[in-house]
Image 1 (tube, helix red, strand yellow):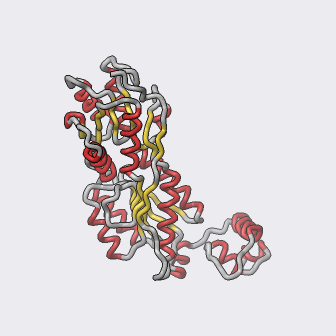
Image 2: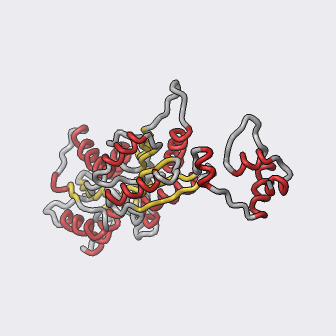
Image 3: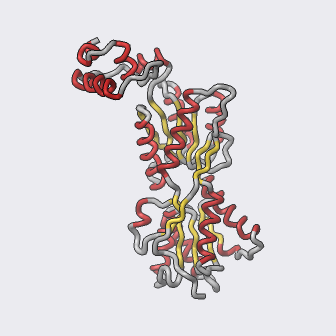
Length: 335
């Protein structure tokens, strides 16, 4: 009532603006700003639990991230928060820390506190059970950056296109001896290794099995993987890494062995985390455009939350096109 009096509008208009409700008659931007300013001036704080009980909406989206310490997932989570706010909603983020039980507890909490929908950012080994429970409960949810294998609404990079793009770039530079370092714990990264091997089969090319190495994407483990590759009798001239973290670890290893990048060994990453452009030499990589992924994930979740007519079709498996970012860590092969 006080906000309506201060803004010189009806109580209904105040309710619609503050609760983000549409109506048959559109409220002008000027009137919306007038209401928001009046509410701010009077220190109005909406009772979100009362609103949730009345409207069955809380205006809050839950997100569970596999590991907030992962630079790519952290960047993606930040972009998702921006997009959620653009919808006039709030995001509550929980860190699963690679722990399936912890992720389950986060989801149980979100279920009981009027969350409008959930985003699962990155995959956790064994999380298919959680996805099945979400499906059974009817909770609107979207998985983001967890690979393409789940029977769930997904927004993911086109892993195949990204891997093929990277190999083609290296081969165009004259590299034939290309190694690959990956981490099989993660769905999307595992798919990248599969597509790497499929590229060679599809094109009837010889693939040296010693060139395919599996390690965690942390830099220390990648250092050891790269050292083993470069100690082979015929080492690779290029190393394609399934993540930028692995690529940075690989670059440390190359430099420690007294080799030059890219003159002796070319290194290509995947993700385009913030440090990639700051490293020296700057890392060439296959970019996952986090802004696009975040926008598509939030838009898809909003469609699922708002519901659709039976005759409508929601595209619930969205693959985002990767981008090749050429910097300084790759050059023409001289061998």
